[in-house]
Image (tube, rainbow, N blue to C red; front, side, top):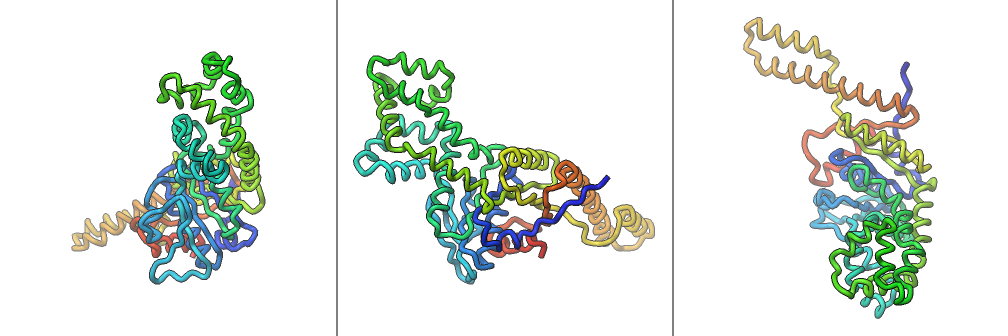
Length: 378
């Protein structure tokens, strides 16, 4: 039994004025960063004010966009010969700077300097479980709230951590809940017992995070930070809730990117199922770097023709080699077709677009434009 699968119309997705956020997720090494950049470029050239946010620390995105580097704030892509109908901006998440900026924005000059110098803060801002994912949510929320862009495209980290940012507010809230704050900000009678109680209550990540802070200053630093956190960042859960609502809204679309390989498609299945569980709006699957057949000649016929050339003693080694390469290409295409058919049988309602592989890596805007054309089926 076959299951019909609709084709994903990328241009309709990025042209729709109601589409405000596109989140690209998938395992590592499948071209997710390039896909996000290509979508952003295409959207800008088709007239939309677009910003692409990468959480992947790879530098490929900056290089392909003609920028020396990407920072924690959007930079406009403005290079010779690039004159889009809209605008294209790009940035890369810096977790520590995003946390620092949040402190400065909400704590005021004097309080923020105290917090930034706090050793407990310096530890958790880089190592506390869920911090990176929460800061990704924070940055996405900032971009959406600014209202400067019609379309925000998010490139997420590789593997299953790509969806961890959906859990970040809940995890961070659980770790920094009222009971923990009361223990750390309570009167001195709690002393070291309160901290031990926190650790023994299951907050092992807390113990790991503060392990670099030594001596009697430990509780004082932690208590000072938590008091400031409780009063200054009292609304952080509310901001995270609003961003979570944004991700579930009709204006958001998730694209799962995968290569036509068993491991990548297994990860893609995980993402599809997780998005369904979370009621996240899935636009479809990008089957990236596929290898379609370029000629209507079966592998068997190609090999037979190559063998005939060799047996006939004709001096045509190049022709025979091309025929054998074609046979290999047909075998690869058939294997990819079977793998994708298995995915669509498991997820018949998921739209799919197949993106043929380029002969070389993408290093510039022309390469990104070609990827965009292939995403759109051009």
